[in-house]
Image (cartoon, rainbow, N blue to C red; front, side, top):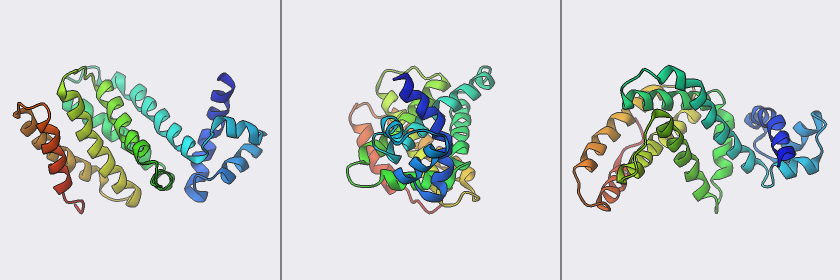
Length: 210
């Protein structure tokens, strides 16, 4: 396991850089490994499913990086909303540094049979942000918060991957305004199942053009 982790650490950044040009292909990964004198067998051990595993590892690694980099700066911030926004912006800025690699990674994850893992990227990202912000909820709001933040992360990341030089930060702020409104609505609904139905229905109606 330690050897596998070592290979992953050595290869991940070169793979991310090349994926922006060549896609998340095994051929590209083997070429990067060859330059580092890493055998094809070691690459397949580290990334059994090829580019998909490398892309998922990138997402997981940067979740922990944004948490570590911002936590000291958030220690004195009393507002949970501000903490979540700052962490969300920082996480998306990391994606904005490699928008083409991210866009190509989404294409890899969009093939049939991978939808659950694609959704899991945003679910895990949202969970990392809420935990880093100090959320310790265990009731129904735990799921609602993560679903709504996952929606913000998904829509904004798609925006920045297609328009990396555009207004994705303003776009993110508008999504936060929307989910804060629906979050207040959900908090007034006593039925523990109905909020999710209401939220899913509402999210489907949000226009994606703005």
